[in-house]
Amino acid sequence: MTPTTELCPASDAPASVRAAEPQQPGSPKLYPLTLYSLSYDLISLLAEREEMADRKEDTADVDAAMAEYMQALPQKVDGVVHVLRTLDSQAELAAAEVQRLNARRRQIASAAERLRQYCCSVLAQLPKPRKGSRKLEGSTSSLILKGNGGLEPLEVYDEALVPDEYCTATITMSMNDWNALFDAAGSPVLVGSSVQRSVNNAAVRKALAKNCWLCEGKGGDCNACGGSGKQGVPGARLQERGSHLEIR
Ligand SMILES: [Zn+2]
Image 1 (cartoon, helix red, strand yellow):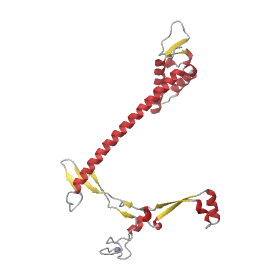
Image 2 (image 1 turned 90 degrees about the vertical axis):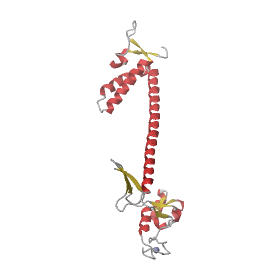
Image 3 (image 1 turned 135 degrees about the vertical axis):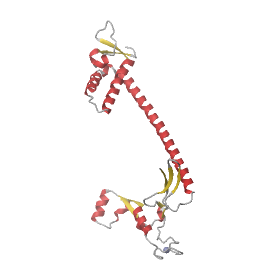
Image 4 (image 1 turned 180 degrees about the horizontal axis):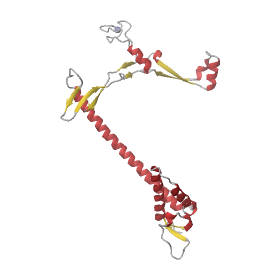
C-alpha cells in the first residue's frame, strides 16, 4: 500500500461510493481508492447530509451509507484523517472570512453612524423652530433632529460619594456562616464575608427627582441647591436627554 492508495474491500464502501470507483482489472474483490477519490466521496456524502439536515429532510439513507462506510474505518484511516484535516482547514478559512466580513460590517456601520453625527451637528446649529423639531428638507426626503424620549441618562461620576442610603450591599459568605447568622443574628460571622457595595440607580433617580429641602423647588438664588430646585445626590447627576437623527 502506498501512502496515497488504500485498498478496501468492495463490501465496505456504500453504493454511492462504489459506483464512483474504477475497478482494478485482475483483482475483482479489491478496489483501489486514491486518497483523492475517497476524500471526494466522503466529503460529498458529509456535505449532502449537512444540506439535507438544513432542509429538515430525512437523512436516514445518508446516515446508513455513512455507517456502512465507517465500518471500514480500520482500512481507511489515512483517507479519513485527510478528510478531517481538509474539513478543519475549511472551517478555519470560513472563520477567517466571518471575521473579515464582521470587520467590514463594523466599518460600514461606523461610517453610517459618523455621517449621522455630522448631520446632527449641522441640524443642531439651525435656529429652533417655534413648532416641532429642527429639520432640513430635500425634495423627496428630510433629516429631522429628534429629542430622545425616556428617562434622562443617569451619570454616577463618583460612586464613593453616593451616600449609603442610595446603595445596596451584596454579601457573599459561606453557607455555614449564613446558617450561623440565621441562628444567632448579631453574631460576628460577617467578619469573613465579602461585601460588594453598589449604587442603586433607581434609588438615586428617586432622590434626584425630589425638590430641594430649602427652596422647595423654587430654585432662584437658593444656596442649598444652587438654583436647580432639586435636592441632588452627591456623586450623581442627571444628564440632558440626547437627540438622534430621524430620516423621512
Ligand atoms: Zn433650593
